[in-house]
Length: 117
Image (cartoon, rainbow, N blue to C red):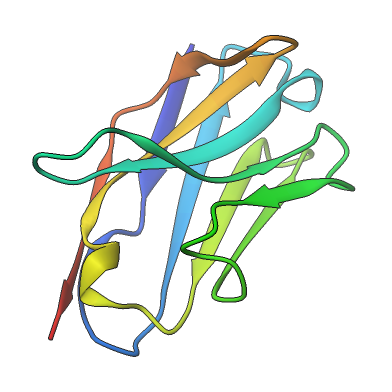
């Protein structure tokens, strides 16, 4: 199983980035997909999750109204559109695939997002 995240980089406060995560080795449409992030000295936190069909989405309180998670099952890809970025959004962002009670059955390598003030 591979979850290949991309799209991270350096952006100024107020800017936007779009992260992508391409999956292989799983039946993508069977998995709830999610984005998580971790910054130095902090625990990993859930940023957003999306149901198998895309109809249900959940967001962490700190990103509601600024981030949008979407998925394309035909392309086996999940996206995270991040707008109005803040320095506190600086972190390594990971995508994950899960089912049932296990939201992070598979976790990809991270992509670094740095927001400068």
